[in-house]
Image (cartoon, rainbow, N blue to C red; front, side):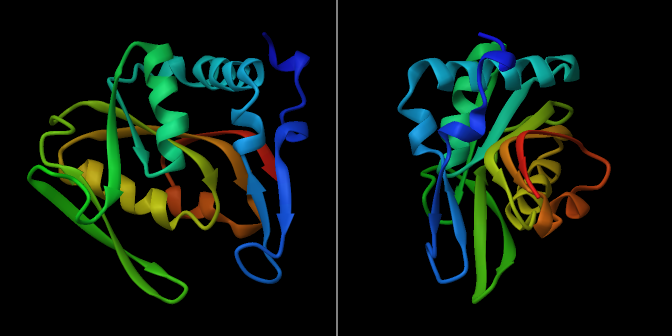
Length: 176
C-alpha cells in the first residue's frame, strides 16, 4: 500500500495529560493494532531509507523494537537492541543521558555492531533527541557509522533534530 492510501495521523491516538499534566502523548498502539496500516508504515519507512545501504538497524527499547525489528526484516538486515542498563545478558557498553529528573543509562552488547557497519537508528518518536543522541554515542563507541535515523513521529516543537546534526533523518509524521 502506498502512503497516499493512508493518513497515518488518523491512526495515532492523542492522550491529553499523560504521563503528566500538559503532555499530549502520541499513542502508536492504535496504529500497531491495524495490520495493514502497520505494514504500510514499515513499507514507507523502508522506501525512505533503503538508499542508505544499511548493514544493521539499532532500536532503543521498547517502541524502537516495534519499529526497528520489522524494518530490519523488510530490509533484510540485522537488528541490534539498545536497552536500559542492566537488561542485556552479555558484555555491554553503556552511555548516560540526562532526564528531566535525573540521569539514566542505555546499553548495547559489545558485539552488537562491528567496526565499519552502517547503522540506521529506528524509533517511534523523536522528541528532545536525548535518547537518540545517546544511541548514536553507543554505536560510535562500537565503531559503527550512524548513517541515518528514522521515526514514525517527530515532535518538531521540541527541536530534537538539532542534537542529531550530520545524520540523515526521516520522520513519517510531524507534529508542529
